[in-house]
Length: 536
Image 1 (cartoon, rainbow, N blue to C red):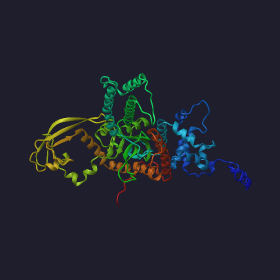
Image 2 (cartoon, rainbow, N blue to C red):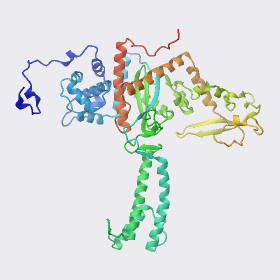
Image 3 (cartoon, helix red, strand yellow):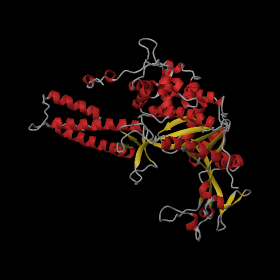
Image 4 (cartoon, rainbow, N blue to C red):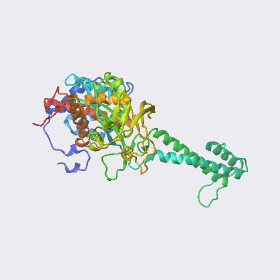
């Protein structure tokens, strides 16, 4: 070793003499069953025209073609590497990444950062649709059923950077009184008539003109006395700025009840991962996944914490993405609603959705609840229900209700003839307060919803429905388990709904390639559903 060169940063000067070896293709050293070979072959079938259009043909070309960057990015997702710095590091050390580069120089982390920034959700969705089309030629993808489920993923945002809608509305309601009090002060100071017609912007301009007209110097700092008009002007400026800030926050909130200051697209939700064990709310996204034949076929990010309102827009996205429909929609009880079932049946879908009351209906408490319509005797001829006391509930009217999404559903109202002197009233008319209801018992029956539930339950309780229910737990729940536990991706790495969705779509690419690799190695190609295991 040459000691006089040991302090230099270029370590090639201190290395000894080595045998000269011709550089060959890195693929010689890669095993025949390695997933990187499968990834390169599958992704080579995709059309990258739209991706190429993100880079201008004028000026300096990209250091590495975008199709190769996309392959490297997806391969990093298969190994659970989500940091662009670690991806760039692998390109200089890992022979698999060097082979994917095809002789191009190893890009820096900024190249991958700019590549991800240029990507759009629409382009990645189009590439995912192409990937599913390629997989359908070698595996059992026939769009027969789709398993849908969601999970709340913690956002890359500060946990205590919350903005609450109720607090903003409460503070906004105080501003008119403060402005009115300020208008009275200005009227008294300038000996003018009432100025209640002026807004905060108009009052601010009015005070500025008065200060300029009277040649009042604007002073700041300690030891200087401010003029009364300057104090009134500053007070008006504070009211105006608060009003503008509250309006901006309400615009960001929209229909949500909260958002994070460091990631305005994230909403505060209650997650299963509670590090303080006090049920606190954290900034998160509601991530919806669609799985078919163990492959991820769709990803969508929503700000609302419940799954009920996510089903219809998610199905619409899948229709536009693949230009065809799935036959069966399989989901859990969180997606059961009148609006969802009405939309699905109206668009010729078959449903296998778990009813929201399925688990409760199996309990003894539910079966013995005399206040429920299911536990009362119904007479179709007279269109009446008979309660446990033997009294009739007659049809009264039809009530129409509009949901927040604009959906209108009808309910038939049945009211008891009299509930006075009924010994079972406390059991029949249960309330959440200590006060007993004084009105007669009323039932609200949606016949259309009950008919759709009956149609859904025919499939849900059939042998096919039981198999679909078992596979939903295995396939879509298994995807969340792999992503969160195996890949340790428990917290999102990007901010903004678009960036989060792009990142999850790229992870879906890596998951699908590894799923294809595992199915080939285990000889499971062509097997769309798992069989139900029965006790011997």
